[in-house]
Length: 95
Image (cartoon, rainbow, N blue to C red):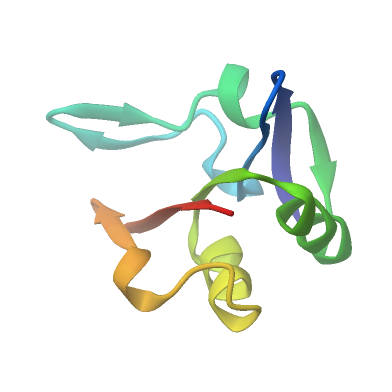
């Protein structure tokens, strides 16, 4: 299960998805990085909905081992796109 939030502007559809257990967690202290509920949580979604949203998105922001694994498997991102914040993988994509 994942947490997600979508944002729409005139030209973009942005999706932010993180592994459910990361919501509200501080994953790095200096500089501080917290997986903020305001940015990553609108609703809970499963794998199928995550894939649907990533297909529609013009910009994606992903945090967590499971969502990164799914995005790599389905080729939304490549290994070169993945960075680590502490031991938590993070990636962004633009389509």
